[in-house]
Length: 410
Figure 1: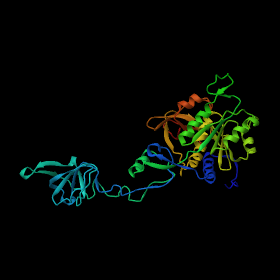
Figure 2: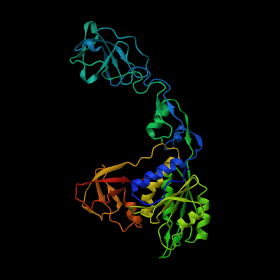
Figure 3: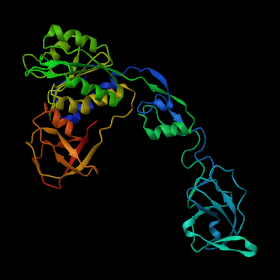
């Protein structure tokens, strides 16, 4: 890793995200690979390219129920030679004046160059009790025929290495006969919550204490992105008690620390990490919530100091830690798909910072309502949201019907 990358104290979120991606690409060490049964591979990252083992489709086939014909014979009346269904062998070539009843997926005979959908055909009785079809419309050659190799030619790339496998990819792998596939090992992500006020989830907290919701939230986010979360014991706000947890976390593939990254007297995470050899690439981002987010590295291990309030930790994980984890897991691309929705109610904020605020996106994904919350510590408000609206730093207000960018929650 070239550690000459300049450390910048405050960045716009797009700059910060890109810096994370650039740094982690340089940090990456070869990840291990394991073989998984195909039914277990969904959501994992493919470790080698997969190519088509033959032409797809392997023969010409019909895209509709109807009749295979010669286009030059239409409009007209054709004799029906018989029928062919999906799974049957290819028929002998079609002769002049013939039609072959054909089902979706069935092989199209040679000399047939079109399929007429059954809805456009009239069956009539021909001479000596034969069956004929009357077709009153012209058709174009190639209509409703899936030509051999039109989906994928033999040897062509079907799924590239570095792809996180979705159900469509699994279907393609099954199609080419992959009963098992090589996938990258899931990165180990250490999660360390800090703060004198943090107690166990099982504890009965006093009024001045809060249960450790951050570690479990971050563990869920890590799992959703394909990592293996390792929850460390909560660390109180002293260097001596922070150091063991940070040292242990730095042995993992990535370290997430929540809390202790602001500028207060007891915000000791960054000084202690520096003592342990961590180099910081940025220490503040022009967003709210999550402004004090810090990103550093020690050796090949990315380190994120996330603000302690749950809303801040959630937003900064999704913006900055998620792409780092995707890259560590072998993924080749890190996308942040932002939707556009229309406000269902007026909204205002104070310009100067880009704000990622909890919101409710309608079922059709078209309309957005801002959720009133009490700030980034408001876990119930965070739980009510299914998205974050992205309020640009240069704009103050939006009326009903105005559009705004939206980031879906993981």
